[in-house]
Length: 422
Image (tube, rainbow, N blue to C red):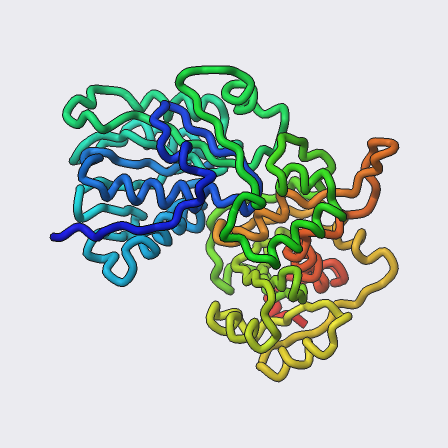
């Protein structure tokens, strides 16, 4: 099999990072900095290079299933970008279980989580038929405990003399949420010959479009603290978070397992348009799927919703300030209707959400990002938080607020199935 000549335009900002062979390689950066895309492309090129034959990669998230829409998706995207239509000649892609194998070198990529002792034990027993575990990529590394890293670090050991080009390395990628996080103290605040640290922002990413730049400037104006952390990639704090009662997990999304289900939608164009399919069971909220898009008109969004098979039988709660859009969704066969906004309704919705567990399916990556950052405004003069949400990066949160319209206004729960909402 003739090897394809690889031509790919890397972001020059990551040149030294990609060439680094130190044991610990850390990519700290803002949203949109391109760090995860770069890491995925770097690994795919190396794993497919005969020079690195015998290397194998383990991708790690706190929750195993979140790999599907992060590391696994990024690596697949890198394969498609690098190898084009002939990718299948060079890579074998398996989805169940998730696994990538270079047909040129035999090198593999596998995916694991570190949520509990059972998953940690599985990591300890990893072996490969060909070569050794040489590289580990920990995405959203701030989610893990220091002890988790110690377990992973201990897996990188043994003789690599069978290939002098191989080396052991752990790659961390993350947004620097807290200045008190152990990663900062253990890696960034010390000088060590085994540690390479890299900082990147969306401003250095030449592949970012102008619309994204405009959204970040809007965040800079409305949420200076959030911009400093998620825009400039600086160490900061996540104080003032509105919701902490959420669980990211896989669950049965079948209609019959819930008391009832609804769709909910927050309209947008320059900011995100977000749709969610939500189930309710014993008061708990379950977000089963999401559609999260920018700069699409209503007809385009309807087509995307149809592709994702949103259930048209369900009531779709929408922002009542957009009656023309609601009318278009009705014409498309959806049971769209506006939420009734009364005085203090936003706070009433938030109060309800805070009192009930919110279960989020791992594929709802944009809702997860928003809920982890949604916070109260801060009075810079008094250094205290105000009873008002930051009006930015909250489109999925608005969707969740609308989804509980029926739930929070309903009479005491009846022991019967509600077929499709009101």
